[in-house]
Image (cartoon, rainbow, N blue to C red; front, side):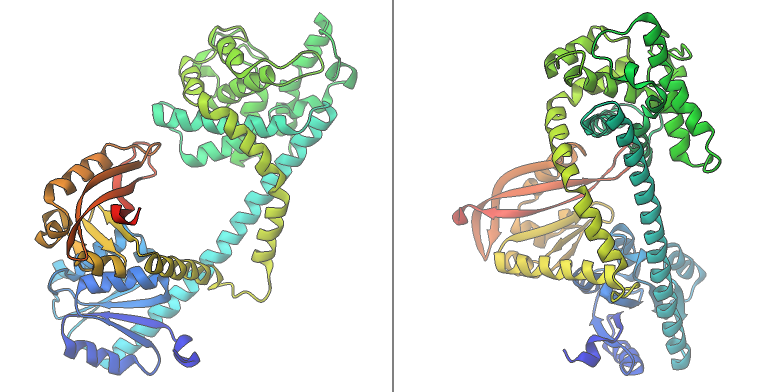
Length: 509
């Protein structure tokens, strides 16, 4: 491909009429690189390979195998429609067709016969509009990244100042965040009572680092006393929760920021107990915000399992039993369940978090360098990176000689790599594979149904399955194993969306 062609925007024309494709290509090829597909399935295969390297799709409605509406359905399912604009060009001009096309996300609808100047102008306008949109999205993304990075950095600085003054190693805050996140994720999968989202979990986890900022006002002789507190000293120490909350409440700005509101809840109420015997306000049960309830349990667990100037560390098992037995106060029963659910992974996650923390500074430096490099094109650098990764994956798939696939439930579409499709004797894109006789030739209908049942029986936490069966590879029946990962939606009640994976031929083992 010469340099001139490489720098041209790419337009994909999807139309079963060779004449229609030729007319559009002749009209646009001086300004754009033209890709052609004679049916919807081939169009999807090209989009699968090229991704957002395609600047625009010109799409017909009535086509064999997969019509224009089915193409749009796949583009919506795979989120391509968000990045690649589509102009529908069709002789079908009835209102119902036009309305359905717009509902499925097309940016424009041109009826045949058309004026060439109109088509050219609309193509130019659409490509320019999406280029500006991509630039705007990247600018907003950078601003959001900077805002979140600065907030996270400030939280980390404040929490470590407190820990340094408290004579701790700096790992306590990291442990609190790790435990908090694990418990919240378990809670999200267990109940919808608290209406938590993944964004809420991220925010509570970040804010948890500020739970003890009030200790900065506690006299050091009390804060770092090696022995047991006197009654008076204990009352002084207990003030840290209210003091920390006051520090946040008295901020002269950012009072409406969610981080500040969540941090206030945690600071003030992370020493409350579910039976009302905590402090400073004696809140009981669900009067205590869930953010403070979770951080309270995380704080107690880490305090039990960590060595302090006044005590030795308890074992993981002992700490769990003490929390269950109420030796550290009463906790929400469902949170105790969540803690026990994540108990096996807790130690490993905390160790991993500690190791990852050592590389955080270096990682931030690299990200900053990438984001602020003046020679990078603001609009296309991220897209180029993603497309390079896509090209690498396709290259590795071809040389590894592995059969790789992707399946979506709605619409029901099986997508194969080029080499995989040739090896199995199938097309790269198959509509309704469970009902397609060509697919049955490669894998029996019963085996497909069995595999589908296994995938639907997975969960977001345990999405992987293996299934052994006979598969027709290179024209011969082979004993194979399917290694698959189910894909679930990111919702309160996750939905099964499909799967991806590869086929292992026993003769290659």
